[in-house]
Length: 535
Image (tube, rainbow, N blue to C red):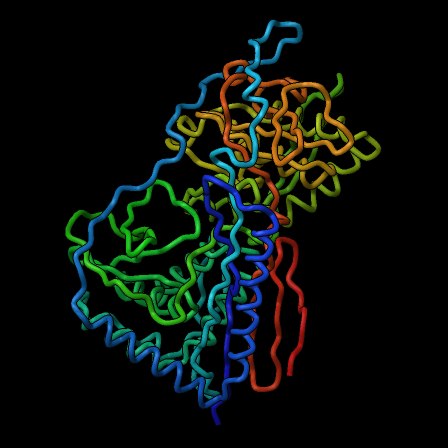
């Protein structure tokens, strides 16, 4: 007797977009409640489907998509990649000298408000639940070892899925591969991939990369087969991944919830699909429609502390604060650093909001928190600011990496050198996690800084009016500058501004459905734990 297995994977993702005007909070709240109610209703309808309904639904969906993929693909125009801030960053950074005359500050700069360009509006867009083919008990499944940035994982793969090979790159060849793969028992493989990503705290790029590495492990000598395996598994997991053809190769097309920099793309409808796996020039062919239920775009947010490495790497930071030398021993996740070398560059908001790894958070709790215990809030923030300003050597991304690279907190600790983007990220993470203050990002042409809101009253200095509150600037790159001091060349430059607040993210939902029980897991940036059991 066939046992039903249904996996519903990230049921919510956040698509944060830049808009010229913000809606009122009440309008935003009502819209979010409406979308959440619609999502809840779809989940209720899904659970009411019978086992036979599911089998018929999944089989029909896959047959229809295979027939569609057989149709002649269209030639598409490839567009160049987006560029991040093109303004060059300073080669040398200034040091604050007390008493040195400063340029006067334009009063307009002090009145940055929430309807100014660059403010980010948070939109919650629930995704459709995903229906997976029912599990067939007794099917032979072998274990395949996958090296995921130096850590080995064992993944069950149905033998019939392992045996499928791409017969070519034309429409009929791709459709034939899809049809054969759809007959295999692929659900346990997807479940294991999701379990690995959940347990290690990875984002959707991590899911793409481990699926890609599984495909390459199963088909090391045939890249087209490996790409089709990746495409098929992620399609069945509900992602709107596409496959295209260029010269003699198949190419994967990925949609993202945020902008991706320096990756070629094409546009289908209003969605950008970024091209991965192509280093050649030539005509590009693909298709217009996605598979039913495969509507998810790849979300690069980290919703909880990553823990990819089995053992941490250690790093000591030394700096001076209030005429005494301070040394802090920290740990970070080296496997996460390795993964981020292949991670797409995206909007800096992703890196501002990201949590640190389990190891960095644990070591900061143990070794940093005691140093600031008992200090007032202004002194705590000043401590974090001096750490970010002076515990790292300065070097621009262009000098260190050859191009602009935003980094997670663990990466910043790993590398000995950092630029203004990195220092603002580490300062924002420290301040959000070890003080009670809110932090806003300030993005200038060729420079990044932060501003802090003190509920008990701001210290004196340059301030910005934002959402009815005044934030005082704190520049982690202006060496030895106290809170309130703006780097001289930016005193009269209007920055883009947004709140740094990962806690604004709603939970994404993972669910595992069997005939007897329905388990729901809430995935936050800190932990995953069962939140419900429905019969």
